[in-house]
Amino acid sequence: MDRIIEVARKAGVDAIHPGYGFLAENPAFAQMCSDNSITFVGPSPSAIEMMGHKTVARKTMIDADVPVVPGTELIDDDAELARRAVEIGLPVMIKAAAGGGGKGMRVVTDPKEIDGAIRAARSEARSSFGDDAVYIEKYVEDPRHIEFQVLADRHGNVVHLFERECSIQRRHQKVIEEAPSMALDDDLRERMGKAAVEAARAAGYWSAGTVEFLVDKHKNFYFLEMNTRLQVEHPVTEMITGIDIAKEMFRIASGEKLSIAQEDVKMHGWAIECRVYAEDPYNNFLPSPGKILALRIPNGPGVRDDSGVYAGYEVPLFYDPMISKLCTWGRDRTEAVDRMKRALAEYIVKGIKTTIPFHQKVMENKDFLAGNITTGFIGDKFVLEAGEVNGELQDVAIISAALQTARRKRDTVTPEGPSGGVTDLWKMAGRRSRWLT
Ligand code: MV4
Image 1 (cartoon, rainbow, N blue to C red):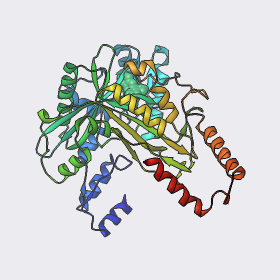
Image 2: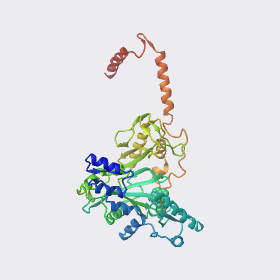
Image 3: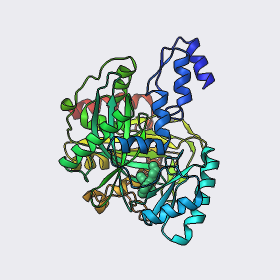
Image 4: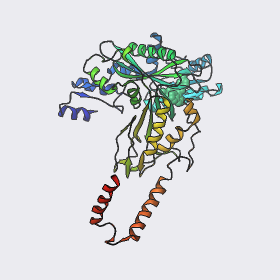
């Protein structure tokens, strides 16, 4: 943080957009920017801090009439915590107050396991966050994870940009997201959107933010947490609304009003994002670091690939293995899926393994195509077998084509001698011009 601020000062920087990395939700960094007269392109340090504290966030939502999962406040006494777990009714989830993203969580289904689970959750919370405060929530079984994008300016205007369906996750890492969600109808969308706007208002929030909800099989929705940053999956929202979310963040940070009112936010078509990771989907998603030897990024109508890599780039082992986000848009979900299938088939990454074949398999999956997706979707369903996905024999095809070309070159003797001379190129050009007429 010190070094970034130092560089920014030397360069005369007046604003820093933190992206969606480590510093995006660090209230100390936001404060440091402000202390150095640099605009932090994000929310206030206090909003970040409040949402980072899960029970404070819950309390704020309860006061604002935003539905939360039935549960407790912070409880220090383990025996009291165990009593409340029984009172709420098993299964319950023990969560770290400083947590989020799946760390320090324990599901308890058997009363005999309560005490051990509380101790385990506390100790995990202490080692992960340096804070062993925990609380309990009723466990929502096999939920959907649906989040609403919000934008708020510093003049009290708040809008939502509809939802993203993010249920396809693996070990608390999102893998595929889409907007809108098959699970919402207009009525539920309106109610959840209003709740998301209320959540942002209650937090005195400005900038772009995301309100996460769990949706159960009866279509009840519950506030889970609020992410106080631009998120990885924001492109799907940009694609269905036409709103440049990062640009709005800059407008808001410079004190301008939102450029849109709620009634101007319209949803058009469907968008899907597949996160391409340097991982081996045939081997339990084992990290696959190394040098990218060749890269072909798909394009064409409705295709957007946000990537940070190039041929020759070395994917390091010690950082996030996400190498790109492949997004497609279509007039409806079927068109978005079809374009995704085409784009995935055209995507070539050599030198490392990627999750592209995994995405190809999901795009053919009956449940996915029907929109039947919950956080349990990947589970153990996704064992990829060699030869299962189209295009897998591409390497073999390339090698045989190369061998064939080399053999032909060696064996072909023209009147000018072996092919490949400079004069041949002129001859070829002449022939090409005749083919065109
Ligand atoms: C839950 C839950 C069920 N019931 N809370 C996981 C990450 C963290 N943000 C909250 N998480 C969950 N909280 C209650 N009361 C299930 C999860 C959960 C989950 C949530 C969203 C997406 C994927 C998930 C995978 C496993 C568990």
